[in-house]
Amino acid sequence: MNYIGSKHKLSNFIKSTVYAVVGEDLSDKIFCDIFAGTGIVGRNFKTEAKKIIANDCEYYSYVLNKNYIENHTEIPNKQDFIDELNNLPLAENGFIYKNYCVGGNGKRQYFSDYNGKKIDTIRQKIEEWKNENKISSNLYFFLLASLLECADKVANTASVYGAYLKHLKKSAEKELILQSAIYDLNDRNHEVFNADSNILISQIVGDILYLDPPYNARQYGANYHLLNTIAKYDNFVPKGKTGMREYAKSNYCSSTKVLIEFDNLIKNAHFQYIFLSYNNEGLMSVENLKKIMQKYGKYDLAEIDYQRFKADKTENRNHKADKTKESLHILEKRL
Image 1 (cartoon, rainbow, N blue to C red):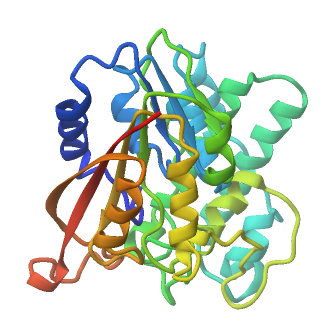
Image 2 (cartoon, one colour; image 1 turned 45 degrees about the vertical axis):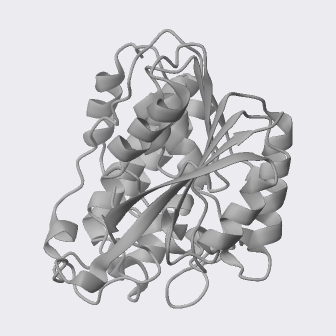
């Protein structure tokens, strides 16, 4: 998925830094990714750590991580369910089609009419199977995660859902085909939460805590509201031109609240090693981050040049202004 703040391209940097500080054998370590997003960091440590704890306050993220992190054993016949979902007759008046397709309301065009109906069809059947106890919880989240990823690939947006495009772009014209969101197998149990990180931090214990909070005022609940709507598939009245739903606002996106919020998170963390991803354009300065983290133990910093996320892939990304500095702040905490 094209995702703001994704650490996919920074995975090697993060992993090598963790190895340098903690050691390469993580088989007895509990690793927590408490602002998990699409779960890419936790997924990269899943087969190495004793246990992964993943959390995010956004429900679409919870769905993705329930599949990619918590699912760890083979689900029997899962491809049969994928095939059946791909071959269902299309629903005509589902929630996505009615509210986010031109044919449904004559206004919003987040999806083509066909794809809106296909999303409704698949989503309704998954929920029906769940309510009738025809599928396990593991299979339910596997199918939902598969739908979220495939719907995102055909969305008529510039990668985020704060607005839709006036005309269907080429990728949005393609017909949605449900494909498996494949997860790594191992023999260890993992745990996924859908909670406020600053509340959850007092309820969990581990060894390595990875932090990737929002860097600026952009709210993920607004930017990815439609993924939450597909994941929850609840009834509400979409608001405004973009069909927004109610969403929780993060204190990490507030210049007046972020430092207090971050200090409390570090103070209440029961983890020896803490790694914070942040860039030089964030609401918290390097000086403030260092000042807070040094209160609780031994501080260090690793940095790498990084290419800024851009929604419009057609823009020239080689310009110097597109570069930013990604930092990994390191704390060995006194416990």
